[in-house]
Length: 489
Ligand SMILES: [Zn+2]
Image (cartoon, rainbow, N blue to C red; front, side, top):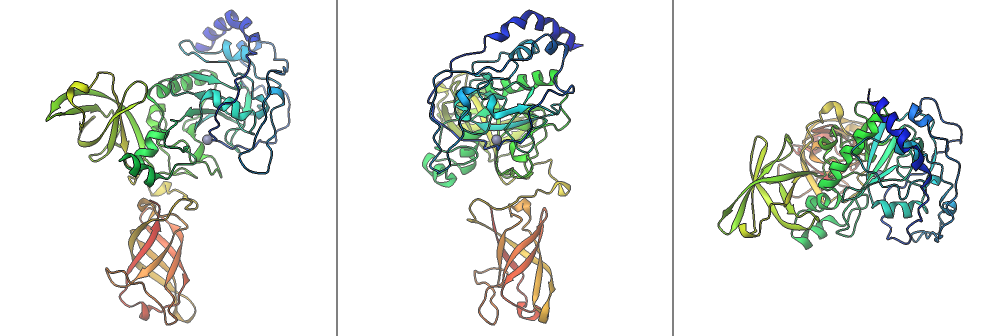
């Protein structure tokens, strides 16, 4: 049994816990991510169901300690509401002794900020059964920001693979309201690039045009974890699983949390953490790309450029036409490419770099392009897309399959084909009925009103819409069977 081994190491490390009071780091640039309102949980004693391992019993329950280091002013981002600052970074209630004593071998944790944002957590009442993945800032910046904002996660994994622990797992951190009670939150630092965050994306089309890439490439480059982050995250999840029984399907994204408006993590390759791709739940934007981190396994010169062979693993997401980029160990982009061929577990591309400039340590990322329906999604798991909060510049043409009539024989509802969520049509999308099989003239009634509708039900490829403007009978509709629906880009 693994746990008895852990107990042995706990005894050796039991004395280390007292050394947690590191001076806080000050004044780092904020990059706002989760706004997770606090749960109103009463303070109390730990449930026996919690992490009460024998190892933990060797550690004394931490006494509340206030960190009285340098203080900072919390400034709200332009709104009148003033944030409530953590009182002098504390009190620290997280149990570092147990955290260290029960840690797996082979994983290194940075405890520099341990406990400093405990004011954004409560004593835990329920056993941990799930892990929530977020996009966010670096461990240092998160720690600083959370002192001024009612939110925090247990861990941050920096882009270089450093794992920071902010809050003890025995505490409920405010990272994914209303699902904090049985979850551990892990933030993944995003790239500082393109002037946006993964919950507040930069203008994708403008940014893409500026850099000569595609909008999905911007999302992938900005949000996808680095190679080192994935490695560290896998270790951390394995480590957490030695202390808690994580449910099947228990690793999921902030965007899947009930009622959330957070879309993170984006471009995340769920296969890397052994989780299912479930990007169509709540605020998850399933049409956005998955950045598949991979390696160059072969290369040769080709007319002044370089032909490369990439290990596409078992990913079924990579297709001909997908974009990708090569980068060095510092995540500096060397060149972009387009996949020209896919064979079993290999993908091929030509990079506009001479062979002499190719180095062995270039890693590759393939952007599985948007619009492809994730394989895990079938009609049974139709996404509730919620409101179309982004732009409506993309339009999808569909056809009218059937209709119902209401008062005076006017058309009341339309059943539409070819405009389902598979076509990126939101469940509150609106659209117009057009004349004939092609052409741009829309249908109007006797009063000159357009026949406009709004979706009431969107399935994978069909939708039901209610007429909201115009009044037309079946006869007046005539042979018009074409509709155009606003969809997400
Ligand atoms: Zn989040």
